Image 1 (cartoon, rainbow, N blue to C red):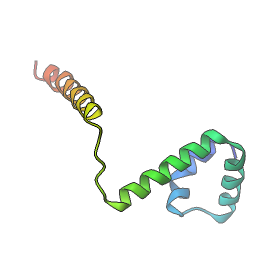
Image 2: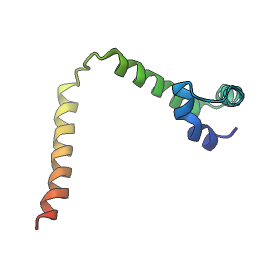
Image 3: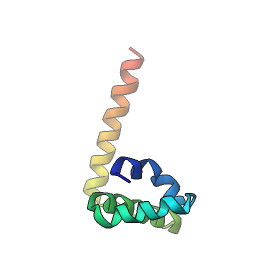
Image 4: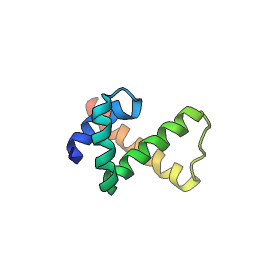
Length: 83
């Protein structure tokens, strides 16, 4: 299994809905591929945080930057559409 094949099967793997034979190939690939390990670990952590349902407080500076970027993109997309 290569990285592209792993990424294609990733959703099924994380959900546990994958053929056990593919799981073995998946695990074998992960043993030797750090970038794929990072992707899988990040997805697992994201799912765990989401399932916990606990709000995560964003740092104030990040929150302000995020709001500014979203506001700019909203205005660029919908302001130009009405013109």
